Length: 463
Ligand SMILES: Nc1nc2c(ncn2[C@@H]2O[C@H](COP(=O)(O)OP(=O)(O)OP(=O)(O)O)[C@@H](O)[C@H]2O)c(=O)[nH]1
Ligand SMILES: [Mg+2]
Image 1 (cartoon, rainbow, N blue to C red):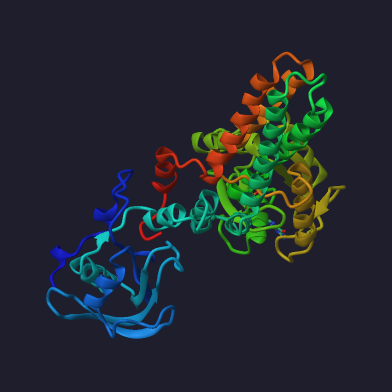
Image 2 (cartoon, rainbow, N blue to C red):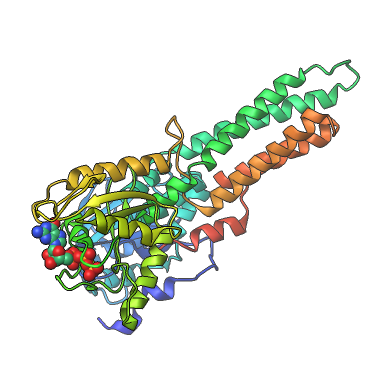
């Protein structure tokens, strides 16, 4: 076997140029050392290609079979693994599909891929499998995007939100709203068709109420944006205090590992250190910062400037210090620098020098008070980023925000003109039509090439 003949995964990355036919093949799993790798084959010739490479062939539909994979050019065995064939349309893409679980590592998956290419398949472009699933009606666009978000999810919250979207949570909402708008448009058209009737056959209030409900639902979807942002990036929880307040010790204790350097030398921490911590209802981006004081040395001064930046971004500031005087000094230092909620933390509660009232007392040494502090922060975050009632799905992508905001704006304009009767019904109806069009573009009812290309260019090869 020689390397240069193998199509590299990079060669398969066709960027935005996506050929839409043919039989495609890709390694669907991540590159690198691993026990198994999955090679996926899909298209009208998938079974014909497999017949040249896989022994035994054919396979019983949707059953796992131990097979030998041969390169049809050389006749050499390249690997053995488990193959499953799916006859279209009962497959992920809706086409005939063959999946082989081969051995992982650098060589075996590439050799299996090469065998299929030599058998007549071509390397897939980014997201091409999922794109076919959308085009064949197996998934809508929102579900396809959910697969991308599921793979990329940085936190448990985003993972759950993507899974809900894959199950159709957002699709269902958007389809219901679309349905309501189509009905509304029909009401208006009815009115338009019978203009000679006195008041029109449709009560104005009925139209207004229907539009108001849709507008409120769109607004409730948009209201999830801050929660989605925090779910993805973590709520910024900044540790602040004078030097030697015990910030880095608390950072390590909350993280459960000795990440930040701790010494009894004031001014130990210079750069900000961040860590993403899973928590409910939102993950935290916990940030340890340099002690706040008028620093003489340049490095420490820069550190204090970085602290100021993290204070400005903070959702919660933990004002740390063992004594009331330390915490008061910290409070003075952060004044005017943050809009985050301030929580005072009496650190080093195991030591006798710790004194004065604080929201919570903790010891990084014994672990006392840590759970209560976590609870306090989680409650504060739940207050700061409320989620609308009724399990409203999170809006995870800018594309969704843009479309939902456009629909919201259109309904708003419709309602304004409807209430003031400033526009004739047929003209007002164009706003409703515009809103429907925006929602269509979300689900992918409008098969615009540029929308599809934009969505799938961010996918990985093999998806
Ligand atoms: N007994 C006890 N000592 C602590 C506790 N937390 C911190 N210390 C000690 O206090 C000293 C300062 O702790 P650090 O965590 O480095 O303090 P800091 O606020 O990060 O200090 P700078 O980075 O210099 O601003 C170290 O000697 C720690 O071991 C605690 O809960 N109990
Ligand atoms: Mg420190």
